[in-house]
Length: 273
Ligand code: MLT
Image 1 (cartoon, rainbow, N blue to C red):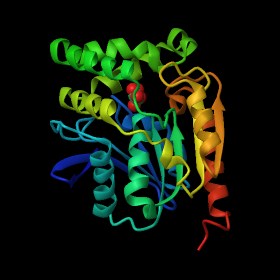
Image 2: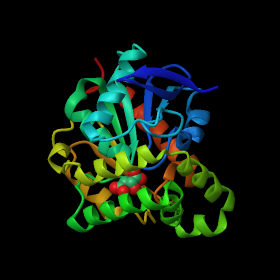
Image 3: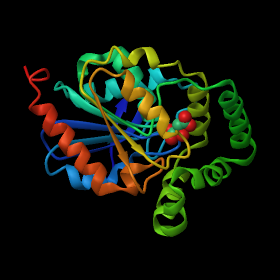
Image 4: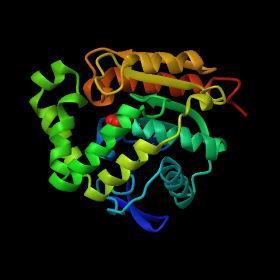
């Protein structure tokens, strides 16, 4: 059964399983927390696995926009408050979830003991990308969420996953289709208008793991390599047989990387009190 909690004026659906070091998983656009089901299953034996549906997504309320990354970070902060989680968390954000993670770092750094940046980038949208967001807003308004979903689906996975794993394709389609029109429109404007987080990279002083699918067609691997070069304490894990959703496409390697990261974090003298 889905858990919900009232934060910042809306009902937020979430997963909260296991005990120990809290890991907070944040999905991308236009996804929801079901993206992290394999992580909840595998990691909740060792850790407290938290995953939220951002406003407008999955089973959270279809809150109308405007959204921005700071607002979404504020929602996460209110969520942690509501659950009385004072212990620093490891925040794992995928794609737009990574953009939210940068905003969260700028606003609530003391709440974090580690960051996992998955399939994301620090840079803002180019002019061309901003025009594509406007076109997508028009598509969503005139043809609905399903038109957005069918346009994005082939790019979400590595070409081989898309061709040879029909159940996975169907699973991702169902996740994408659970996003409300309000959520899609809110996200697209937030994505288009987000600030460049490149300068934030050099300020992050907790350990960071970057995880990227070698065949990511939405955010090329070179973006992850560029971030790794600018972070003070970062490791880069490049997952083969994976595109934009490496945690779903190569689950065992992704989960093992998370386990190793958290183990190293807990034995890191700089992060121990
Ligand atoms: C996402 O997966 O969150 C989006 O594709 C990110 C983006 O379009 O920049």
